[in-house]
Length: 253
Image 1 (cartoon, rainbow, N blue to C red):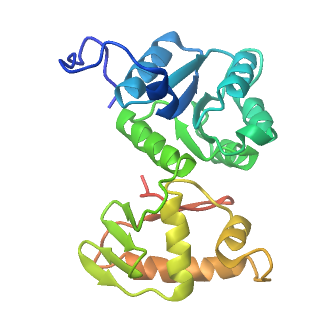
Image 2 (image 1 turned 180 degrees about the vertical axis):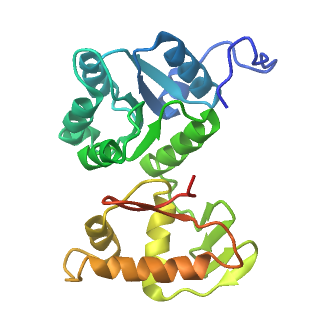
């Protein structure tokens, strides 16, 4: 959770300095926020988690820092001086070197239409202020896993859901689940991109392939089958539906 600097104890074994190699291997998070207190807390807590943090307080500075640093993740406030967060997001998605960066919008705009606009512009996730600090950190970690995936992983985990890619076994709450081939591929893709919302068309491209013609509504059928398979014994629904936007592997609030 977010903590003030006074609340966090100093680690006795913390290194006095950081080598250039250490700095290069840390995930880079660009925090774009014009509220000084919130910017300070976000920076402090992200650094405590082991990330290298770059700061920007307006949209123009954010675009410059993004091109200079090529961050893995951008925490982007919507309401910014000079250039709005939504325009920053749009320009980043048009920049080839920055397309792989994950973007989480931070905003007081909580209307559904605003969320959809942010997602359609290219944001990977959307967190409304005031937000739960622990939720934001969890979403940041999930976004960074997508931005910097571990090669050779054979197990995917989300909450109490586990997928063994070597044996093609799926378990939830320590119970085996039975999925069809399409549902398995769909779940695998969603588990590799936890928390990110995908439209029907995006899911068709990634799970079925661009060369196969399938009606977009077919995705809804397989999502229903997947829900039925994994949400057993009254366990929480792990698939979030975002109206007019798509689906995500993400526990409903």
